[in-house]
Length: 118
Image (cartoon, rainbow, N blue to C red; front, side, top):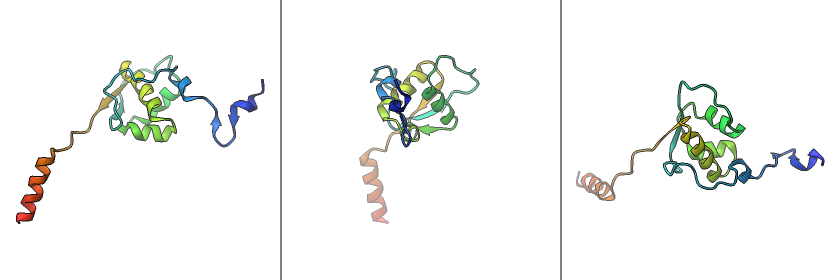
């Protein structure tokens, strides 16, 4: 079998996304949502047995990085990146932080009313 079938000069290697996750579609933790901030856990030895995509995620997340940004940089579907980050989270190789919740709409309406009263 020729290697030419498995390489596209413009797009790179052709590997279906489901192979990266071994067919899994649900991350190891539901804590990983689209706006989660991923940070590589510090002071860890080089992990063994991870795929190249896992290692790239670890390298990119040495600074706090949103999950959607990781997916964009890797040019992978967000669902695939959620599963890969879930693998790293389950092994405690990354930390997942969430932004503070948005303020309640009533609070915002009260602020607007207060500003109008000025």
